[in-house]
Length: 449
Image 1: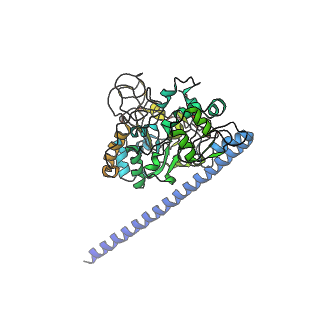
Image 2: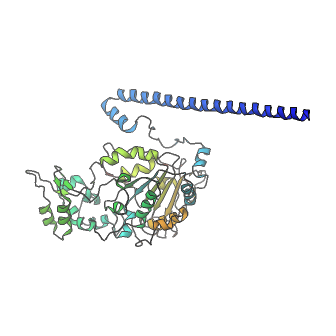
Image 3: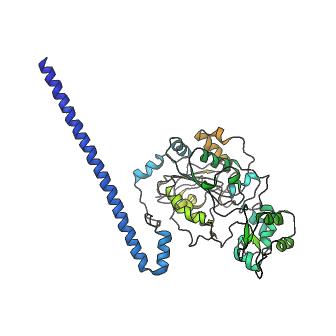
C-alpha cells in the first residue's frame, strides 16, 4: 500500500513538473511573439522613415507622390510579374484550396469575413429598367454614337460640357433622371442583406440612380463614387449652386434642348456656364468621401464582391486590385473584367503548356447579377432575408445572360452558353494584377482598352 502511495505521489510530482515546464514554454512563446511584433513595428518605422527621406530628396513632386501612395504603414505598389509575396501555404489558407462560390459562402457562414466591401456598377440596375452605358445597341453610349461627338464619353465630359456645348447631356438627361417607378433590384437588396447581417463594411457604387439609398443602405456604409442625381447641382464653370427641383423640372418636363439650356443657364453675372446635377463628369474630382476612405477600406476588406461593372472608368476600376493578397474576390457579371480577366480563364479555355494553375482567391459567377446573388444567398441560407422574386431579367453591363458562341461576339460573348464560370483557372503566375494607383487628384477617367 505504501509503495502504491509513493508511486502515486511520484506520478503527481512528475505531472506538476510537466505542467510547470508547459507554463514556462507558453510564457516564453508569448515573449517571443511580443518580441516579433515589436521587431515588425520597429522595422516598419525604419522603412517609413527611409521612404520619407527618399521623398524629401525627390522635391515637391516626389513628396506629393509619397504622401498619396506611401502613407505610413502602407505597402509599396505591387510591381506585377515576380511579385509573389505569399507562400503556397498562405495561398492555400485563403479558401482552403477550394476556389469556388461554395467555399466563400461557407466561410461567410462561419464568420471568417466581417468586413465585406461591395463594388457596384450599372449592371446592377438594368433589371429596374435603367439602361447601362456600354451594352451594344441598348446602352446609353449606343444612343449617342450617331450624334457626331468627338467620342461617346463626351456626353459626360466636363470640358466638352463647359467649352463646347451642354446639348448632348441635356438631350439624354430626361432618360437618365431617376423616377419613382424605379425600384431597387435583387442586387441592391443583397447589399442591404449584408448590411443587416453586420457583414457590410462599405458599398462603393458607380451608379447615379440612387437605388442603393432606396434599398436602405445606410449613408455611413454607402459611397457614391460618381455622385448622384439626388441633391443640389452647380454650374459646371463657376460652381454657383442650383437647387435639385430646378434641375429636375428642367430635365424631366419634356422641354426641348434649347429650352433646357435657357432654364439652366448660370444666373451668375458674366458666367457662360450651365447648371448640371451633382454627378461626376469625366475630368472632375471624385467626391472627397471617396478619396478619404478608399485606401483604408480596401486595405481592411476581407471579402471583395464586384457586381455589374465593366471596370473601365478610373479610379474606380483600380479598387479590386487594392485589396490584400489574402482577400478573396467574387465577381457577379456578364463577363470577366479588370483583374478577373487577367487572373481567370474563360469557360472552355485551357492553360498553355508550362503555365501554372495558381489562382487561389478569384471566383466569377457569370450571367445575370440578380441570378448570381440569388444563388449566393441560397448558399448563405439567406433566401428569406433577400425576400421576394426579383423584378425582371435585366440585360446589359453585368445584367444579362451570357450569350453562346465564340469570342468576339460582343459584350457578354465568349465560349459556351452556360451562366456560370466559378471553376476557372489562372492565367497569370500570381492570379492578380499590379496594384494600380488612382490618378493624382482622383479625377474620373475612361480606361482605354
